Each structure stands twice: as C-alpha cells, then as structure tokens.
Amino acid sequence: MKRSSCVLIFLGITGILIILAVIAFQFITSQAEITFGPASANLSVGQRFLLSWQLLQAKTLLINPADTLGYDKSFQISLGESPISVANRLEAEGVILDARSFRNFLVYAGLDTQIQAGNYSLSPASSTIQIAHSLLDATPSEIPFVVLAGWRIEEIAESLPSSGLRIQPEVFIKEAKSRNLEGYLFPGTYTVPRTISTGALLDILVASFDAVLTTEIKDGFTKQGLSINDAVKLASVIERESVIDSEKPLIASVFLNRLAIGMKLESDPTVQYSIGFNQSQATWWTNPLSVSDLSVNSEFNTYLYPGLPPGPICNPSLESLRAVALPAQTPYYYFRATCDDSGRHNFSETYEEHLQYGCP
Image: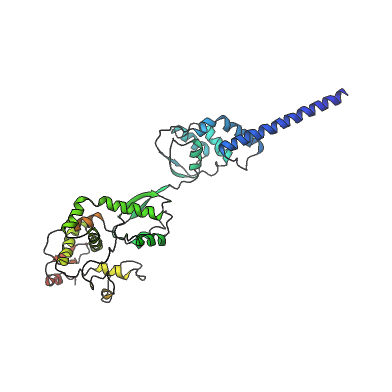
C-alpha cells in the first residue's frame, strides 16, 4: 500500500508539473507573441519557449530605440554576411542597443535567413524590431527620378518603367495632358518616394517650374510682350532648336524678330512635334525631315501657321526660359546649323546670306 501510494503521489506531482509547464509555456509564448509577433514555424517547442523567455527578459532593449535623437546612418550588408556579424556591427555603430537580443529576435521571427545584402539607411531612433524588419529589403524607399530638358510628356512617361516608380506611363500621359502640363514639367533630378502617385509627381515637377520663374524672368516675358504661356511656348521651341546654351539668346532674338514683323517661325521641331512618334526611327523627333513632312497639316506646324504654336512642344530648361526673357538684341531673322557637327549655328540678317551657309 505504501508503494502504491508513493506511485500515486509521484504521478500526481508529475501531472501537476506537466500542467504547470503547459501553463507556463502558453503564458510565456503568448506574451512573446503579443509583444514580438508570431514565432517562426520552424522552431521546436523548446526553442520557441526559450527564445520567448529570452525576448521577454530583453523587452526593453528590443522595443526602445538606441538614440531617440539619432540621425540616419548608412549601413552596408555584404553578400553572405552572417546575422551574428550584422548584429555585432549594428550594436558597435549605435544603431541597436544589444546584439544578442537582436539575434534572438531574428531567430524567433525566422528573419535570420531573410536578411538581404545591400545598402541601407538606418535610424537609431527606430526600435530594434523595426531595424530587423527593415533589413529584409535593400530597395530604397526614395529614388531619383530624372526629367531631361527638351523631353515631351510622352518621353517622360517612357522613362517611368525603368525608373523604379510604380506609375503607369499611360496614366501619366493622360493626367499630364488633361492638366495641360506640356512645358511646365521642369527638367531636373528629383528624389521622390517609390510609391508616389501620378498627381503628386506632376505637382512636384510643376512646383519646380514655378520656383524658377523669378520676378526677373516674368518681367522679361512682359517686356517681350509675352504672357507666361506664350513665353513657355517659345522657350520650348528654342530648347529643341539649340544644342549650346550660349546660343539660346541669339535663337530667341531670331524668333522674336520674326514675330515682330509677322513672319512665320518655320521651326523644324514644331513639325517634329506635329508628326509624333516615328516608328522606323524609334523617336519622337523625326530627323531628317522630308519636304512632305513640312506640309503636315497641324496647328503646331509653324511652316504652315503664323505665330506661336497652340502650346509648348516640350519641357524647356531654365536657360531657354531665360533666353526668352533676356534675349540678345540682334538684326537676325535666320539661323542655320554649321557644317562641322559642333552644334553651333550661323546667324543671318537676310535670306540670301542664310543660303550661303548651306553645307556642301
């Protein structure tokens, strides 16, 4: 009877211990899951319990930032670098508070095998948990987006698929044209969020245009008898006609002189804009133009229609806008490309002189 009683007592105690162990396991792991998220399915029961316990003990180190006032720091992870090495360097550089608890969290969450090599910008003002999750994607949240001077709306749109932005080219074209923004999407390099919307991107480009339109430039437009819209039209033509910035005030003087006497602008880029995309040349700017091209029936064709085109033909640079506002004072009515492929032009007062500059 005594032996039987001892067995029963042993079994009872064992049962109680098992129950207590289960309760402890459930309590510890549930608290860890509430604080740190779900545990990796690859962990054994023992690993999950031990890591949950260790993380709860290090809770303060994991949820508090290393430096609430710290600045972002560049951090590079090499291909094949171990989580231990990454954790130790993060602590050494003051990005996290404790390397060991960081490693434990990585294993607990199953992130230790998901860290990506690459360049990161990490903030010591972020918690260790946030830092751990940020190392899963080396893709920067902001990227540079380039708009080249002289591009028309469609060319900007064509650059979108390779830019890293998520904007669809056709959506960009539709919204830009619905807002009549040709000519007002200022060229430059912009650092923008990868997830930026079409409208927000257009707003940034237009805001940059507004920013460069100084009082001096506006007063210059007025002095030439041009509204801002007409000045942008002329600047867009000058942008496509010129190669060298220093010649832009001279080219502006030619077109302003022509406008003053009612002479047609006869600008090749306005014909190119009228034609649109050239499939055989794979360009929006057909070159060279044929005689029949010069007769294309479009209001943008300044060989057929006098005055400025009905709208800008591209997005001009600051130099082209300034050329319209502050043109050279010349007697020229003609200009023609030199024959040395330098991008320069010969300027003439008469048509006879203009013909003399023809290339053999």
